[in-house]
Amino acid sequence: MCVCVRGMEGPSTMSCINPQGKLCRSVWKGLILGILLTSFFILLYSYTTPPLSLSSTENPTVFSCFSSSVHESSKLSNMKNSSSLVVPTLPNCRPQKNLMFLKTHKTGSSTILNILFRYGQKHHLRFAFPHGRNDFDYPGYFQRTLVEGYRPEACFNIICNHMRYQHSEVRPILPSDAVFVTVLRDPALLFESSFQYFAKLAPLTWAIPGSGNKQKMDIFLQSPLSYYDSSGYNAHYLHNLQMFDLGYDSELDAKDPKVMQALKELDERFHLVMMLDYFDESLLLLRNLMCWEMEDILYFKLNARKSAYGSRLSPELYQMAQNWNALDTLVYNHFNATFWKKVEEYGSEKMKQDVLELQRKNELLKQECIAGGGPVDASKIKESWLQPWQPLGENVIVGYNLRKNISAQHKQLCRNMLTPEIQYMRQLGADLWVTQLWASIRAFFKW
Ligand SMILES: *[C@@H]1O[C@H](CO)[C@@H](O)[C@H](O)[C@H]1NC(C)=O
Ligand SMILES: *[C@@H]1O[C@H](CO)[C@@H](O)[C@H](O)[C@H]1NC(C)=O
Ligand SMILES: *[C@@H]1O[C@H](CO)[C@@H](O)[C@H](O)[C@H]1NC(C)=O
Picture 1 (cartoon, rainbow, N blue to C red):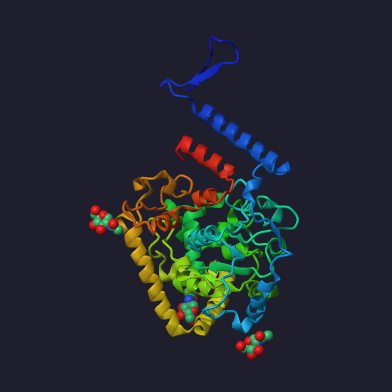
Picture 2 (cartoon, protein in one colour):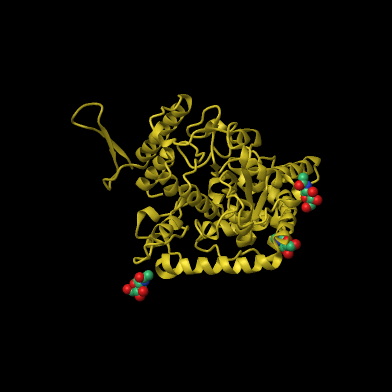
């Protein structure tokens, strides 16, 4: 029951109160709608007006991609040779600073981003950030005008936020010697993870019977076509998501000749395709390719779910998930094969030893940096700066607390390694007002 009374002050002050004295549901709804509409119009406004360049101090290294270091491209010719994509780590190899990292969804890419943020910060590199938010208008295609501070001829060192890839738009804003990297994951496990994370945001899952995402996913996989609608809002999260992120039509039949064409294109574009399933090996290949130090690729798992350890797919469901994502499976198998070829070129024995070394260093740092030695529930994170971003309506992403007495040498490194993506981007000078507005709306309504 909702009663609206006219206030004493005049006709413009109406208040709607239910018998318990609380504001009515309909009023809350109106309020939410109002806020969302307002933010929408502000957003629209910000996209239709050229951004004011108030922060010109922030762009110390604006350079054009055409004039950039010719002498650095000698190494590129080496990398272009597809049979020797892995540049051997010579003691005198030149560290690479220009990188395109295609951040795919649910592939451990937040952990990789932290590595790139640290490297960029240490070497004062220029990031191509989106403006307002932490993705480039995903699921729309990437456009270079979405880059904060973009102008024709602008050039950046690193681009690494979520996007739907479009090569013709990415290529011009990076120097010619930029290294192109992405990361893939076993498509059945990716599907499982994506379904758990995004089901609520894809209305087509609302009609699937069953309580909870796990049960819904099982039912969905039994007969996907009776629930799936490729034109549904956010439907792309539930079908060949990797192909979608890579910029291709994720509804293609796996036998379509366009698929082979896509594989060929990807082979030519990406110097390295990492695998979440072989994460440490992937990072070592990245380090080798970029000629970075071991310290540069140390990491703690970020943005992980509470129960992320181990898939809960039965062998039957695993097979069904692969069949449903046949296109992604094809792409994955192709790059899994090239991945292991690269490991062989690196030296299988050397790889094993380097993986152990990396794990040992990570472990040591974990002991020093992390209170309790491991991740904790979000509610137990003491410092709000270290709170990870949560999916809507859930508190499932775990985070960390910093230990108190970290050695002076590692104090900053520890903090950086534990800083979640959004906070790190702000620290690097990204303007995330849309994300932050959304965060405050959510905090207000406790979503
Ligand atoms: C490419 O690599 C192959 C095999 O390692 C080598 O024989 C060939 O000379 C290289 N080509 C160039 C242009 O470096
Ligand atoms: C990837 O390739 C390796 C080596 O061929 C193989 O052992 C592994 O099972 C493959 N991984 C998946 C998930 O298919
Ligand atoms: C930190 O404090 C604990 C207990 O007070 C002590 O055992 C440990 O040695 C200290 N570690 C460092 C790196 O100072």
